[in-house]
Length: 218
Ligand code: DX5
Ligand code: ZN
Image (tube, rainbow, N blue to C red):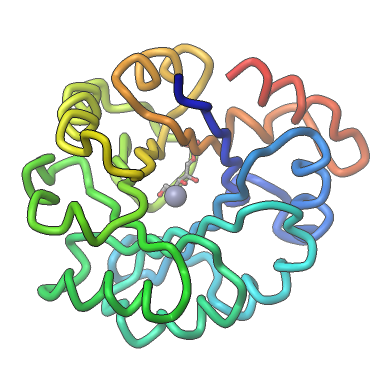
């Protein structure tokens, strides 16, 4: 029996009040906080960087799960580790030397995550299964919140759970997670669910109770 973690993505929160948003969603039952870093190069959108992660660290009362949608990535790993990231997830597609990237993350003292774009097959992680603490299956093309879940990724989640076997590796799903799609990905073997719009809809720092209702609905 695997415990399921809900990781709200603050990409869907109020950017002018991110510290308060992190505190509010933690108080409402978030298991982890998911921080989406975008560079306008690996993905067609820009969000924020290590300075924001460092500023948010004291407001994140739980695990800080940092998803790097940036290329190149290696030169920024130390900065995110120093900012207090617990998990640092890099994309397999972001560079040619994935072992080096994962070793750099662990070497910096963080847990190493590996994200896969929807077009990348499960088998691509086979060479690094013993170098990762988390695999993140993107169920949208990364870059924006609020996109629709790509149903074809469910078989990949199931396959990855088989490949992970009894290793202590989290299987995270990111993109289009809502109460309906959550059931299917958990049945396929996911144990960490990232959700942006499905958590932050209907609430605010002035009235955060809907965040808690939304988390419990997932
Ligand atoms: C997409 C990001 C996701 C995104 C999820 O590029 O990696 O974390 O914020 O947002 P929703 O849950 O709205 O699809
Ligand atoms: Zn993400």
